[in-house]
Image (tube, rainbow, N blue to C red; front, side, top):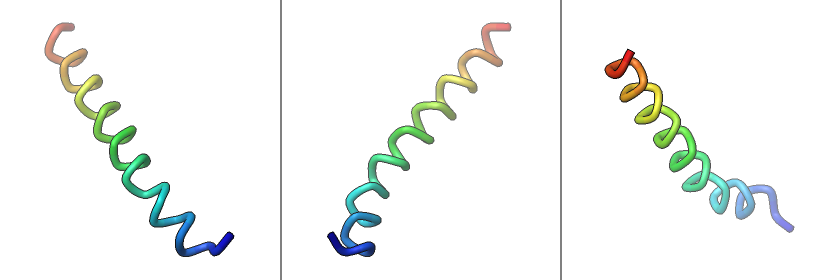
Length: 32
């Protein structure tokens, strides 16, 4: 498998996970 294609396939997933963690930390900081 090509490195570039695998990277472009995982990039949206990494953005989704990082965005989810950011929102979760944001709401937790508001609740505390």
